[in-house]
Each structure stands twice: as structure tokens, then as C-alpha cells.
Image 1: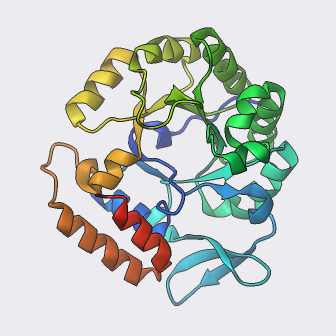
Image 2 (image 1 turned 180 degrees about the vertical axis):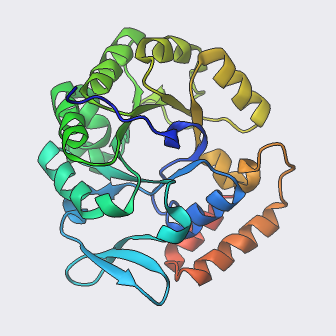
Image 3 (image 1 turned 135 degrees about the vertical axis):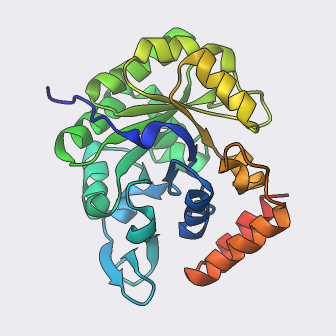
Length: 288
């Protein structure tokens, strides 16, 4: 059936959330080493990625995607990320999303469309949370990618004004071929200081079954994660701030590694993969 979602084990357990400036190769590699089931890269603007040139970097063992002028937009290490890497796109149209996806299709394991980012840049560009008010466009993006790509497509959304609207929006994406829906359990007007609304999750999961649902928002402890998954039926959780506070939380059933050691390991990964020092500094500052 056209638009039928592809089954994938990517959308289970604890996964690393897409985080601008943080979710680059060094953090993703470290998260995988600690036990993340899958890792989302930082959001890439589809219009820019579509112009990139694929370069095999023999010195590092990476595949780089650079603009025609040589500026690096995305870097992956296939030897360590294969089978676990999701590329998230900010896109306003299906054509642009498909063009960008084609560039990285052979080097990632899935494409995710950001439909929840509330920042001004995304909204003005018709991306992110702007798509929550453009269901036909959102649906067209998912259907176009699901129909034309060899890898699964997913979407990350936020809560709409009512539970009924959230479910209706998510169901149309699932029916269009989304292999998974991630729900950030806040609305676009609620920032991270607002409590995640976990009580609304179970009906969404039930309505979308059998499409997997990942939940995002303030899960800091494994007992809470397990209780949420059992109570709601979601297949996993997406960790952003909890991961930054101590990435070793991906080590299920093991004590946290002291933060100083985690940061030192992250710095080592940045040296290993020639990380951008501004991003490195930003990520380390986000742990405190």
C-alpha cells in the first residue's frame, strides 16, 4: 500500500533527541557508546542540505556533506552510526524535503521532519511548528518521502490546542506513511519550564497503534521511563535535556558516571572527530 510505514527498531527504548549545536557527531557517538538505541542528528535546514556535496573523509573515516564553498553541514561515521542514525530536517515543502533527503539517503537510517520547533526562524520559514497549522503540507511532506525513499520517514510534533486535534494531526501523518511519531508533550507556546503533559500521552498512543510513538519531555530517571512506557504504551522516549545533564543515563541499570568523566570523554570525542569548538563549548555549558 502506498504510504505504508516501514517497520523499524529505531523507534524503541531511549534515543538521543535532535538538538541544534549539540547533536553533532561527537555527542552522537558518545550516546551510542553509552547505550542509546538510536540518535537523531541536529536539525538540518533542507534547503541548505539539498545543495551539499558528499565527501568521503579518509583521514577521519567519516562521510561529510559540505556546501559548494566547502562549509561542513553534516558529518557521520558509518562504522559507528550505521543502523542508528536519524537525520532530522527542517523543511517547508515536500519537494525541498525530498531533495535534501536524497543527498543523505545512503548514509543515514531514517529521515525525521521537524514539525514542532517554535523558534521564530523556523516559523517564518514555514518549518517546524508552522506545519502544525498546515496539515496538508505536513501530510504531503511525509507521503512524498515515504513513497520515494528507501529508508523510513518519521515526524516530531508538539501538542495542539486539544487532544482531539493532536490525535487527528498525528493520524494523518501516520496514514501518509510515517514510520513513527514523536510527541513533545508540550504545545508550541509552552517552553521547557512548563511541565510536560504526560496524562495526554496514552490516548495518542492508542489512537495511532500500530504506528510507534516516542515521547519527549523531562524523563530523567529510568523508573519514570519504564512507568511511562508501561502506562502509555509508547515504544520509547526521546531524551534531550536529561541526556545533556549526564549522557551516561543511557546506561540502563547502571549507575551514572560522574559528570566530570562524561564531559572529559565528550571532549576526547571532539578531538577525535575534529569537532567545531563553538559547538563543543555550547554543549558542555548545557550540562550545568
